[in-house]
Length: 615
Image 1 (tube, rainbow, N blue to C red):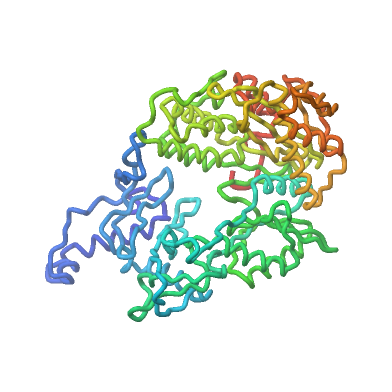
Image 2 (spheres, rainbow, N blue to C red):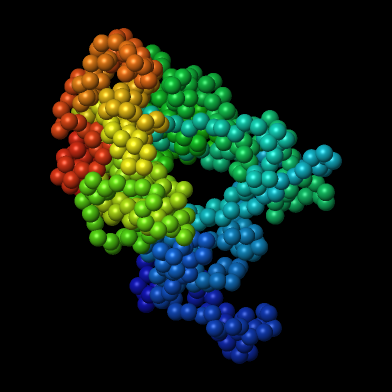
């Protein structure tokens, strides 16, 4: 069967299961001319569900996962029948995913693989003392729970493991009764990029660790009761009183971060006052830095022995998984070479393109047409805007490593409340641009210096609807781009100088924060930070603190920028508009101009260099 289907050896297990399924339904002389199925159940089997192993099939997407603009089904390969449930097991070659994940406990109760996955989850819950069984107090209410099942797939498409997770129905919690504070800190993406840039220049090794069942380690301060989940034995009338946090409850992320902070602080680390998810430890042996994001962490520094010891200490406190050298973090592919580190989201781009069936579409050279302006009245409103909003959200996350689409995403994000066909066409154009530049990545050079500088610019009254201006800035650490922004200003500016000054104040705020952050990372910046600007009037106001009625309305921004200029936090060198990099974040450009500006952002294609890693 495996050879006739031309299937890879990874599907040997699926072949065996299918063969057994068929043999059990074939009459045999050994069983008096009956099939094993009929001898066992006393009725003949139904042969209508049998299919040829390895044949092409079409899997219908549920209506909640599709819309009018996406296909109703996907071409897959038949790999057998469901285990313990009615249905087929189908493999999607484009996503390398086996489409047979169950949705309920009843579907998997007889499947030994899923049963083992649930047993592993319950064992982890028991080891951490997640709950005790008690009688429900009269004045309390118990929330529900459910099992969530997931098949983990390796990069080659084979099955890594079956994962079952017990999730509480936290949406039933009531504020003030069984939860209060829920906010949990995570590392800022600017912090992560800055840390990678520093590690690249200083030749530090960057490793990654993952915390297994992270939320189960958090300590709860409120009384929460939960209905015992299916598969857990209990006496009638008993409920589970949670002692530890559980996935799904509202305060689980906060409880886990508090627990991790206590543990890591006891190991000599201190939280940065400028990013509370950044932990630093300086000793005579060197420096160790941890950037923490929920259950993933990046560890780097020059204290190699200290990092090895730290991993052992963390493994004693939590169930840790050492993932080795940084390769894949939060959907970001990381490649490395003597030239530095390269950040890419090419796999995420492929996922987005596949979702809207644009994997084979025609490409374009820029994310937006030249001199295009969008308003809320353009086009016909979309009857189903969900996909538009989903794609815009995906594009926002993609700007973590793709500053070249920041302005375009800033534009389409303004219409998520009521998108039209014109706005949808703009999103599709961005996706076509991404398909042509899918391997474009952000380089953190190992050969640059740690001096840094900024660019600030504005498009005055560029919005045709409300005539608000667009602020843009970007900040480099050596040759590495670490921070950028494209954002509409909150108020209307009456002159280009006023708009420029507001942009300078925004950029100055980011510079001040980055100076503090870099100091906590061991990169001092005693000299002022150059902030290049192409508006001489705005520069003159900073040089000459003269206020009158024409500048009174921007006096706060003037005072703020002038203060940091006079105290040598920043300098304001003039730059020609033709060389102003931040134009990329404030307006559209011709293809030639767009390429010129993009080439200034330390972006390149992974094909251009020899890198090791996931890209």
